[in-house]
Image (tube, rainbow, N blue to C red; front, side, top):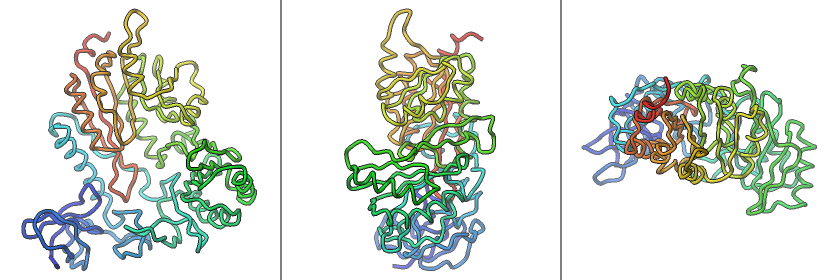
Length: 441
């Protein structure tokens, strides 16, 4: 049935939300203040609707710059909020984070200092890496249409950095010419190197695929290397897929870091630099022994090592840890291979004069978070900890556990690493008053 409603806000899942007959109705491609007609199923309770007509545009609506964006089912499913103004996007992300902390973490908004939402330095052209599908018929790397597995014939993607967009446009035909049939293709671009690298997820990755990969590299001079990943075996490396990035784009003094397309890297390099800067500013690691959990390829490790007395960095054995270990640290970093929580718990069980204890900790876990970390940090003597998270629900859950272990959530801040989408990065500063009281002033 058709309903007319006023859109009140952008919801955490990416849709606009309004109310009709007491029901919350979520409608994609709507912006706050829009008056719309939507198709919804009969019934009671919250539901999702399909946009039928935009009766009147609200003040938060802007003209999307991308020709592939919109409610038409034939359009790209990548972006969600290209029709919403930057203030509307940032406001929605901040409210989503704080409301999740309230509901799941039981953290009232007034119980911590709110640092606001730090915008991305660039709302478009910010991605240094992205994942695509190969449209064999068109011979190009593409995204899928919204809620389907149908390819979008991309002219260009406005989220990709210029070098990455050029690589995407040239790589599809080159992959077909080399005779490779990847299920997915992840590509990365380094402005510092002026070249890119690609991860190809293949049905098999053996000597035959290696030869085809070498042919692909020979025909694509913008590619430094490939990672060929089969369904189970270790990946094959062709060429040199390790790229170097400036830690802060345009600031050579901030140093560089290594990456590989099969290893996690924050795609928005400019916003990531702001995130790292804020994390260290809040942590204040000077003179401290710091425990870094989920260090990955060293996004925070190098900057920590430059300021802390020492860093114990923990990550699962694999290519990410290898990349982190390859970075010079001046002897300030000790790396530990293993499950981050298990290693931290093992440290906490140590007794005697050689037991490892830490004045500060920084953790940046994957989406499933770091359940149970609060008591571990307390037992390790951590006075200050910074928790960085890409999932606000697990962040809220884990912060609640830290509060129950005796920590206080001192400050929370959000970062817009993915403009034009609902995704938001959270950063929280935790303080243990008991441990802090024992620290030398």
